[in-house]
Amino acid sequence: MTGASGLLGRATVGALRRDGHQVRTFQRGPSGIDGVDEVRGALPDRAPIARAVDGMDAVVHLAAKVSLAGDPRDFMAVNVAGTRNLLEAAREAGVHRFVQVSSPSVAHTGASIVGRDAERADPAHARGEYARTKALGEELALAADSRDLRVVAVRPHLVWGPGDTQLVARIVARARAGRLPLLGSGAALIDSTYIDNAASALAAALARADDVHGRAYVVTNGEPRPVAELLGGICAAAGAPVPSWRVPAALARTAGTVVEAVWRARPGADEPPMTRFLAEQLSTAHWFDQRRTRTELRWTPEVPLDEGLRRLAASFGR
Image (cartoon, rainbow, N blue to C red; front, side, top):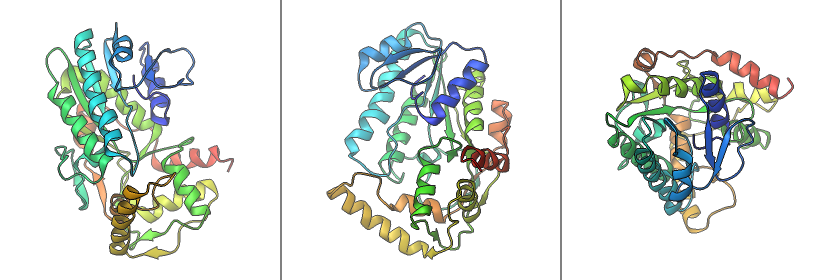
């Protein structure tokens, strides 16, 4: 399994082990997980990848370069070339099942997504380098699907939970700094996925790969909420101010486009404060039909959104 050192990676290792799998992890540094066999290396390097997949029956590919901005070459090296290297190594090692962890952003072109299933990845129209290269990586993975190497693509949407240093930490930090506005009305419905549910869905995809290979699935809690309510719930769980001021959505999208141009010329040390993709995500609806996902993967989320928020609050000592 790649990418085990992140929030979803650690949770997925736990889900796989509960299903009886022996897990080997592959990442640049220590995973911090006891009782797993570790191989260190980077996805662009073929030799350590070959060692990682040797003797394995299955691969869960979770590692990726995730950022709102950055050098396009870095995204290509990890999300595209790295995926290609892993697929080739898996094929040569006789791996039988391959779960490609993707993202709904691979099929998002800026408009609202209302009750749709997993649509075809669209790298030509995906928003930003992360989404574009993840779309290319998913296309590579599904093109490699065969009788011998059964590939399933899973797209968890907005994964969050206790210990999240990405989505939750950034929302809370901006709220505490007074820099978390609502874009537009804040009424756009969005789906999200509690961490335990995302991990169990990946384990289910691996278990069902023989029957559902060659297909892509979006995974969410299936409980869309207004963006203002979801942001407010996360902030309240952390004891941070709930966002109350608003910025017109069109203005935020324009500002995001300008910030992206500035960041390309003079990158900052942290993530840009706004991008067009982020503005679209926070001001347009994006929720998904989960019927095919749940039926074909034989999976249902076990942790409801409100219970997830209670667990998040407990992790902040509240």
